[in-house]
Length: 388
Image (tube, rainbow, N blue to C red; front, side, top):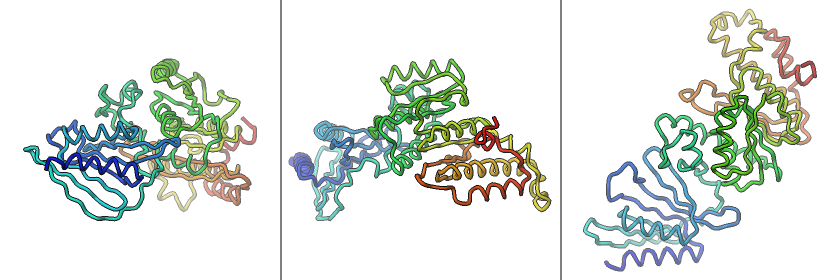
């Protein structure tokens, strides 16, 4: 009985040395406390060619992952199993070993010969790509408490951050950025997405990039600069200016979320001019095309309703934008990136540069759409033709 815990940890250490560790979990908290994770989930990962132990803290409403070197990680888990949790389960490539402790302090082991697949070390294979809530800049931005807990007011923004990072992660895996890439967030606002983007690209993925947030309001620019300095984010910068006037020498990834009306087109035009590798926009306040639209006679019973006409105009505006991007050699996707309860501005367009792409029949398709709805002008088209 007294050898149960030492045997459990000796076996764990041997599995680590042999490269046979698949995962290790701690469960059954000794006390009911919302501040205590329901369980801990540890697994080996490889980040920037370094083997680490990633420990995910699973709460009722969130997960937070932290990376440790093996010695520190195992020491942390050993202490947690003595003070916080009753049960531990070790999974290796050829066995499962469990230790169960009673409230009286007794412990017993149970072993099973079970085959498990070898551990997947790639950090981005698991669903732990979110931004941990204990990141200091999230507190400075008002999303979390000083203890690293998401506030009630910050929950929606925190979910948006994680979904945004997930989308960016997928795009970068699909289309890797070149070394020294410049990422520009047009209309960065309070900066919470910009900070999360930089943190993920640089500190999680280990990429060699610099990020610039462009914002018109001086107070927000200054606030973001201060937070970036406090967090030692040396490759993150904020500049004051309009979207259409900021013209960097290099632009590899363009982001423009909730830029109003034709400001989205200004951002896309900047990306096209710079031949950006990746572009991500979430349009807002679609007015320009709607003013120009003529409703086809057969659609009037449907579009005579103002709310439906507004939605049709927004769909038409974004559909034409996607076609313009395809004409310029980009593969595009248009999708809902966050549920409506978080924001009504939930349509996102992503564009990834495709070398040698010709745009196919995009021009024919957009001209047919314009004729169908009586659209004589689209601001992005005018920019591309040099009329603005």
